[in-house]
Length: 431
Image (tube, rainbow, N blue to C red):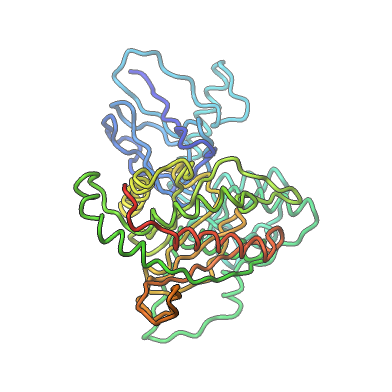
């Protein structure tokens, strides 16, 4: 018998850690190669970690809600291979060595972890909050009192305090910043009146993350908006003319979204100071134009996959990228790297019938564009023979930007450039 270490794989260029959300296998279960063993989460994306070998799960080294670094061993699988047994993983003890005494210490720690999973320890306080072994270990190491621990806002599953919550608290604690009581505690002190017809719905993990990000963005950026109406009649007529042949040739549905994304990418090249991020008092001017594209998930939440180097794609390439990301978002098949590295975001509120919106900036970006519904409206048409009223297809573009670094002139000029590109669309354009 040999032992195989199931490690957290590298999941993307900027993904360094993940949170264990659920173990799909228990100790003693038989596992086949490529069979999922556990579920993990990185920000908004949930993924499964499969086994690389056939065998039996003999050790679980992390509990649900624990944060695991890329490359760390999460479980031990016993195989029938003659390969020599692996040493216990480094993360199970602070000073792992190759001597027998250290191995015994690792076994003891694993045994304690199993016992903690079998009988969860509830912190003795009036709120009855549960803290994972990792959180309690950090609290003990940093001399965080029970009262301090109870006051930390948890962003993990069911409002639990995660490793990142602890690290954020320690950073603020060192700076002398007080931590307010979590919403859950305030709700207990001021109960909400409910009756038999009311339904209490627990927020999902993703819902809590989105809520946290939205509040953080509003508290961080000075949001201001500019609006402009664009005449997209040429685009409407052109797409109607070519969409059937495009489908036959490329096997892709040609929607309006890739056309709008192409316009945004071109505008960002003209106005590179919209393609920036703010880090404290420093402005980071992004070299690549990576467009975030807000997409709906099956549960109604939104996620923002990213089209990398969008300015280098022609319309065919942009269409394939948009359709691929949208399809995988609907099927919950996005990878962590698919939502990393965005430099500017576009959201299509017109999908839901809205004619305009005031979207919240996707941090640490400084701008986001909302696309309103395309409407058939009466409009004044100017010609060399005079003005007349006709039917046109129009839409509103709503641009939210960070007024700390983007002034009204730049914010307005950028969205005007997007509108100008759309209105100048060639009805005879070949693709």
